[in-house]
Length: 109
Image 1: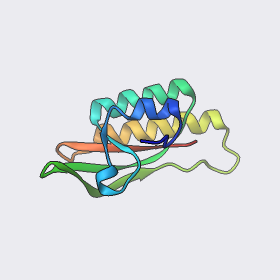
Image 2: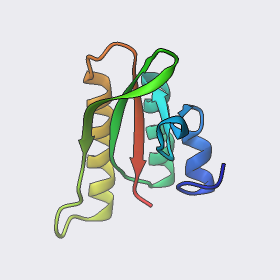
Image 3: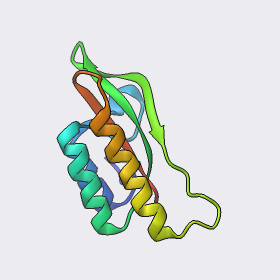
C-alpha cells in the first residue's frame, strides 16, 4: 500500500484493519489501539481532525455513520488546537457505546 498520511503517521495507524475493502484509504482501530495511536500522534504534535466509526460485520468493516470532527477556530494557537482536538477524539472514543466499534482517525497533515 502506498503512503496515505505520512510514513510516521501510517506506521501508527496501520496497526488497525485496512479499510481498502470499503474503498477508504485508512485503517480502523479498536478502542485501545485508537487511544494509543492518538497518544503517539500527540507525541508527534499531530492534531486529529476527526474520525469515523465502523463495526466488523460478516467479516468486513461497515460504517455506522457515527463520527466526530474538530476544526481549528479562527486565531486559535496550534498548540491549543492540538490539545483540544486530541481531547475531543479521546473523549468521543472512550464514550462511544457501539459494541465492537472500530475507529478511523483523520490526522491533520
